[in-house]
Image (cartoon, rainbow, N blue to C red; front, top):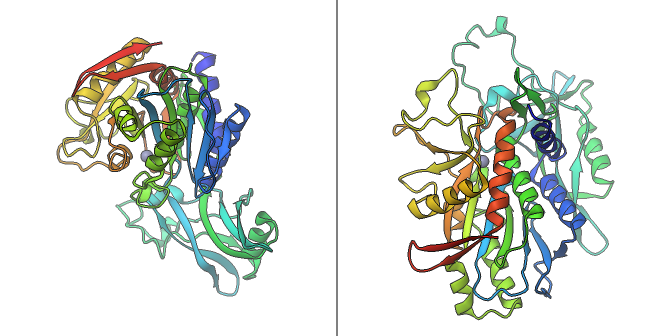
Length: 440
Ligand code: ZN
């Protein structure tokens, strides 16, 4: 495998390793934006946006939108890429300590999203998220990451459950509770948390279990990589790199990462919220666009909704659609669904294919088997507030929602090239379904 491809996969792996939850992912993205000269904005403050400027804004510390404005913005569209910052995992409940037989201390947890439970057993685990601590003036939120293997969810021995290999159904309240120490000391978890949060009085917390196993390159030819949270931090990182490394066209470049996709996106910071709409409105206000000019610019806007999809599984060929069978490393996925769970239609498909052709990037089509319901994603939800032409794309991966998933090394670089070309494309709507496409 070419070193350039392996290096890029390595970058993705290290980004994922240092982003155990949406809070750390967004903080790492913000740091990268700052390093590249982006200015932080707060939703509560007035925005003094200048032509040619670079800005970002976060909501709830777990969603982020960055944008770069060209010198003249009148009615030029927004070129947007969105992905999500969260992954399925287990959330720590309030009062989580449970002592067993005066010895073991385990934590009470509940499911966040739809994970493959069996993958969480027998792994080194830790806890991260954010805590809210008391201050002299009120409260403040701090990132928390207990960077240590503090927990494990031990499997039950095969001798104690002979049915374990015959389709066992896992009970989240009984089977999935992590053991964190011996000695029966109920205060241990609070102490770990206090140390990680910096010793303020903790009044609230959003804390999650995460897999501490590092990502690795895998395969006889180094063609795969396995890691936690590939869905969707892979797309979040690749789109960030494309956003930062693409030339500025006459369109406004927008980069979005939303939290809570795995639980339906219906939060104040999710794709279904007004976060994107509010941000675009404020951009248009500050650049003196009239409302009509704003609406005209939306007509020429385009969004890539980037969330990974399923590759053909070598042991379950029958689970894939008979005529659309994407492979890992076969190129960027374009995702289709007749019920419009994916936003792709003939026009958005054609625009994206044209961009892939120009970037010399292979693409492949993804559709669920007609008798299998697929998952939901971002595009159709963010479209409820900001209705623009959108294509659902992603990369073909294996073991989606395992706590250790597998993706393709080559695919990551394909996606980077396609997204970079997307940001360097100017679109002008010339009526319904008609676009002038200009590559800068
Ligand atoms: Zn996803």
